[in-house]
Length: 450
Image (cartoon, rainbow, N blue to C red):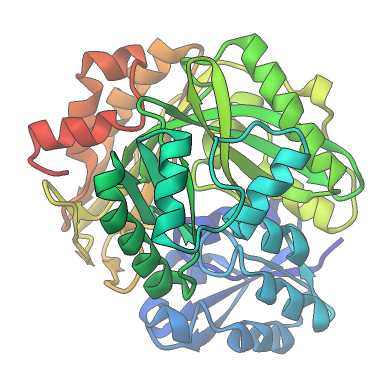
């Protein structure tokens, strides 16, 4: 059993890990920038270490600073949360070289799945269905145009090392290809230092379905159903639910087994999410996230498991505390991401919280690091909280979400709470009849945002 874990993150996810570790009797170390010296995760941890100035590159992304914090405090393992260094294979290698344990997958699995082309090739070999597209990188515009004609327009050009919606451009026809191809390459180069791109068929009305998987690193793996994350703005998820309103029990069992078998075959360890586009009853692999997801609480709600606790257990070499047969879905859960942003343009809105009240009651969970008087720094992601609700079925969960949103108070800054009040009034959201383009079309019509 670990005696002490360092949490290499901030905000609500750092708190999430600290709480799980405390329940397991494990001490925790928080790291923080000078801008986060009064942050809640710093207050909640058993120890804290300042690792640099506000800039993330000089603090939360500084591998030497994080390793030094481990050495100073005697922490034996590092939990990366999500974002920052959570999918950095070099970070994992450095951790292992210093005799520490990374609470997550191996460096090799992160490296393979971090390259979109290699990930797709790997998944194909493991029997996971993939979107039709190029076999590898596409080096020239001429080759891109040839592939566009062969695959059939529309197509999407994606940066090999991309993520978060960056380096992704759609070409509706051959005439669009030159601009889309050059823009995707330029964004890949500027954001990820790699201008290689690949091409896939662009599905017109798909849903975004992701399968939560978990492995013990010894050839055993399970799936914990799916999450529907189709309500997105600029490829960023804002509303997630489980189980998916469009997925049947038979489809869930089928694709879940394919995913669990795939990660078992590569001896994957810890939590992972295999993401698909889903259209006309077919699943098409797009990427695998080798970390805990922002939206993991909806899966925890319907299965009654603590995924962070399981991450820590398998990192210690212990077996998973459940089998596939023991995982049964109970009810329905929804998560909405509360951002400190000003509508209608979603401009970041940092500032001082003058009053904060979290909603409560049966089936309501609020993951947030806010408190009265806290000043949201301008240096990091604008996510300030996640509101998760659980009900016996989807209608009850939707009603509970509306009630909880009405109880939530965040004064002093603008937030995206009004967006969710508006969405809950929409018939398509009430019925679950939406796809990955629905929200952007709605925003353009109702808020003038695209």
